[in-house]
Length: 448
Image 1 (cartoon, rainbow, N blue to C red):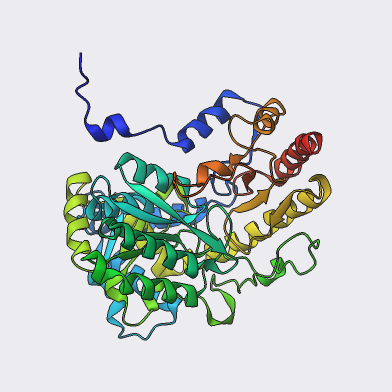
Image 2 (image 1 turned 60 degrees about the vertical axis):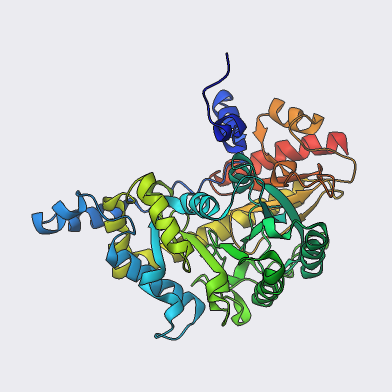
């Protein structure tokens, strides 16, 4: 008998993140350096307890927090979000790009990515992504029946020449009309740790604008800034690292900005505001269990996403929004962010020391300036994928990483690299970081 499931349901594959979490649970002694969870000891328990006490100190503030909110989100949180982004970008107070009317609050930034893709793309459309990119977004694209083309990365972000060659090729083949968006993880990219320079963002926007006429519709830049506020302090400069470590990316001060004035999002690119969809999150820089994200969107995408969200949940959890709004306004959010950045700098140093000690010199890796990950490259021809001897041996030694091949789109124009791995220091303790890298190094030395 034929299945009653929709085409989307039949097409949707199991997300790799679900499989990786299952593997971790099935191996109780496993040290997971895979999942991008945040640091458990630094979760703001005391701050949230204080905020909850303030909210429920009276019926006047407690009852509204326990009631439904609106689809767009709590007005105070939307205003606080707009002002927070304006300060991060160093924009003038009257800049309409950072208007509250363009902000929507979502159930994590993941929901916004899903809804934006749903609002813009039809089955068979094309999305442009970094090569490699955030593998969960690849799952969204796959479930919607989209085709993906990977744009090579350089040390300061997208290879603009490669982006233009892809757009030109699609124009020649008559497929440019199917291109709807370019998805970009712009700060301390998941998985590579690369940060896209402001100049590269402007360059990408100019190229998208250039090819719009031939496409017959706008092509949007979706900037995913989930890791923007996880910038390390200058002590993680990395200039003293081993020669094989690429450590030229300077890191910014503890306010989360990038150095040298290059901290601006694509929203700050004058003349392109109507082509930028910005998505951020409060989960990673404050508390992952809060699961509150936000977006800044132009019309008509804003209205389309608002209507889709109305069908999803008609509003993100109101109590969580009240907690975050108070955290931001009271300064607790910024203070916690400073503590968190120092914590991640410390853990990244611990992982770097372990990598230097235990990884064979043939394995190359980049020193991140923020975020949660190291990106390691094995010698050419040495595979790291799920079916590889390296991955199976790592599991047998009770250590787990994310195979890099999962982070590459199914792009028919190139073969997927299968010799890379993403290693996370986010949730593992310093002890487990050292032991996990020791175990993984032992495996790699065997095969190198």
